[in-house]
Image (cartoon, rainbow, N blue to C red; front, side, top):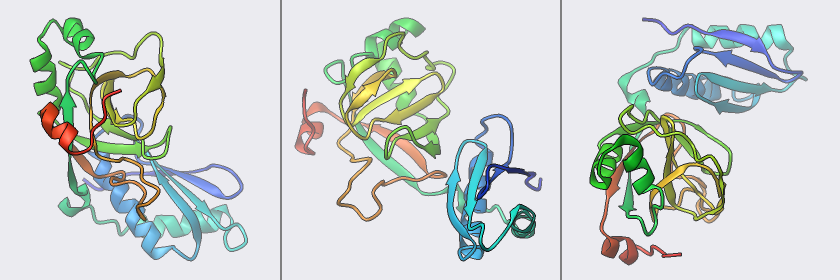
Length: 230
């Protein structure tokens, strides 16, 4: 089925391209393909692209285009959109030490679903997640979908401090806290992978459209890789 979209005015120098109304993993390759094509074909016309769950924000140079003109150019490019399997993005494995020492909400999530901590770990690490968007903090990748058998509401009271590398879930989303920050998600474990690194030209090892699999590791493996206990 050919992708469908709507182009909406979003200010004096931006448009919002809407591909759907509900979060759907089928939209991930579509939005990724649209981002790549518009970046390649309209690079002289635009200032930036921001992909999200169901939309793609495009900022353009109002000195070169008004809304009708950029709308027409976007329509022309999206009409040629080819969503192939390669647009699913790369698969990234993130090592995680799942343990109450670094995952203070493991027991809470287990109790919420009336399962064991081992079942929580298995259910979280068995799924391949799609990255829908990056926001909230630099490198904070919103991933989904967490299975119904593991989805757990946010904490009623957010923590004032969540350690960088904390792997957490909230409802049907999962994420890694890239930096130390307040947060209200359920923390299951911790990774040594840097999700935001100012020394890396790419800054973030993942981008919207990529896929992630969490791989359980032991405490010794976590510490050997540079993991810290706080």
